[in-house]
Image (tube, rainbow, N blue to C red):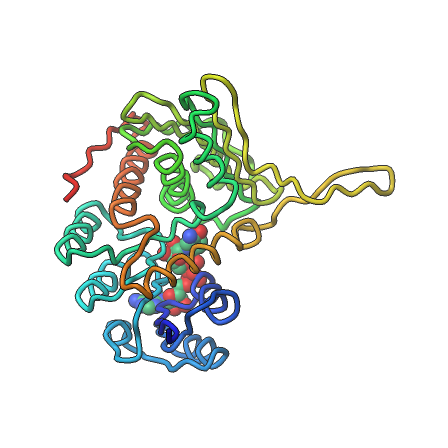
Length: 331
Ligand code: NAI
């Protein structure tokens, strides 16, 4: 079968990674079109993989030499671009967030349902990480009984001052939202955000760290430590507490070096190192399904639910109150 022809829209940090993945690490696809608001950036990335540049992202979606689309533009551009993909019948891997607010995300869910096909995959790559997949399998198997709680940790070494607690909720805690839904197989129904004493490197008035609590439909609790100025490294851990045991992922169990009177391993410096393999596996799954005219990974509903929970989370951060999540009707 001929290779899947992919347009990549938005080729900043994430989009350039996806272009490289499609060109060098994923089978069955090639990048034919690149589009970016920054024309120089588009030319540079396109030239490296022999693709052409299309200035207008919507023209890239509808182009004759495109079978599927990867969207890695800023979140504010996703709604229009993902709807254009649905209009053109193109399978699309859309980076999170699906859109910027609940009504527009639900509109995407409905627009996809109206096509009668699954066409939207949202870039929740942790589902493709072997450790998360193993934890999900453990939950489903029932081997250690019913899942009761999750303890999640999301730490970055450093971020710019613009990375506020509200931004952290929407940008990084969003992954814990999807992991909770993926691991436990149910919806999050309420969010609370607690703000303990802030680290000295946090801007005045900003909450960092933050302790976020999710409640789920069946009454499970999930706590998330979001701490983005640790000065250490990129650390993402999850502990599952079940009826007859616990399981932990994200322990950085790599090479342990003994030298100069010390021993120890290393911690991933950033998300590309920690989840690089997961991004590639996600892309391979997208390409394989898109070649059949569909998608199989986390879909529009998952993207919508994440947007809705994060909106509640942002309200919880701002007001200091417990905020309930009320999802629309699933088509
Ligand atoms: P970035 O700022 O590095 O890149 C965005 C690119 O999009 C820039 O080159 C910019 O010129 C271009 N752009 C701006 N407006 C555009 C438009 N209307 N149409 C086409 N291109 C446009 O941002 P980054 O970090 O690459 O993030 C991109 C997306 O990926 C965001 O939605 C972000 O949330 C998501 N992301 C997801 C991650 C994950 O773990 N799944 C990790 C990092 C980012």
